[in-house]
Length: 90
Image 1 (tube, helix red, strand yellow):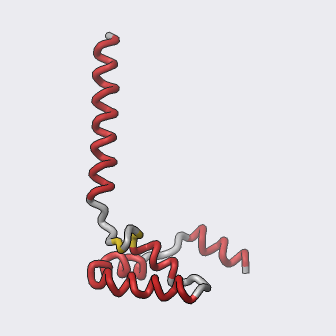
Image 2 (cartoon, one colour; image 1 turned 90 degrees about the horizontal axis):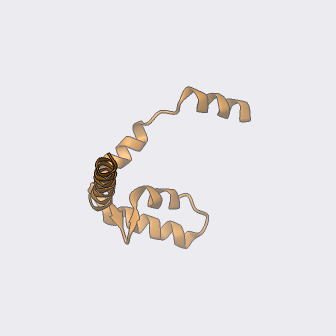
Image 3 (cartoon, helix red, strand yellow; image 1 turned 90 degrees about the vertical axis):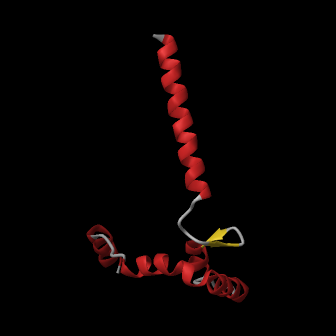
């Protein structure tokens, strides 16, 4: 029984590591200089002009490869809970 459990645990760990490796290597989000597009988009809201300029350049360099993510962000909708929380905060 112990041998079977060891084999199952080893198999589960191997599958998990393969999944993590696959996700890391084949990320769907485009990146520039090691930083993903969503992080660059957040940097566009920064107060520092240098950070904003770097973010603009990164988004330009990513170009049309970033359109699926940008369109997805534009079409996303807030949950009813978030909308109520924002209304209460105001």
